[in-house]
Length: 242
Image (cartoon, rainbow, N blue to C red):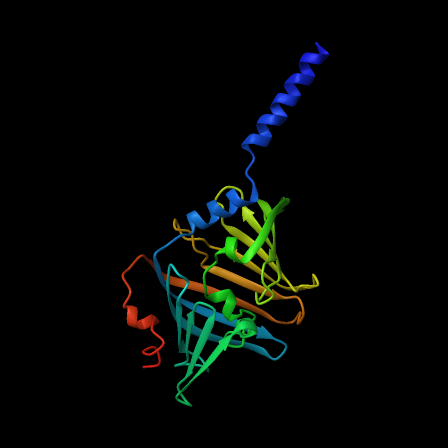
């Protein structure tokens, strides 16, 4: 009888192992439920530091390759445009009527003085090409049972050399993202909430700066439109400043 019980326990454990998802399957599911061909939205960013708060609004469009155009429509940087093509950022400053190009470490620069970087708000999340990753257990955040996935960058050029992502076990969307330096120092934490229906997209995003602890940024997204045909010239470097 004892032997039968042991065999049953082994069988149940083996089935649990077979049915359990690995890190690659979890990331594939996340990418699948958040996949779109094109995206456009309006967002407002509120930045808070020891000097007070500022608010700016921008419009965004993005295609499935990660090419992104951000146009600031209100606030101190009104008229500024940011175009992301592959690993290059082009910033148009209307007052100076000039375009500045950023690449490499420039992707970690602050967007509109916020704790969001250009890397956070643009580009293609192709994790297989950019990171090695593994399933590191489970964690509950705000009552949501999450997988914990740990990422290590394949290239030194990556803005974040290490990441830790909490992914909702039910919807397969990111809930918390912890971003680290190569040495393992926590740089900031990003919280995602208010997801739209499929394809899932967060409408409330907050950051906590682990280095400058008085700094935080909050982004609220409205007017989300998926899979509408875009004018290709809007994502053309030669045309975007006009």
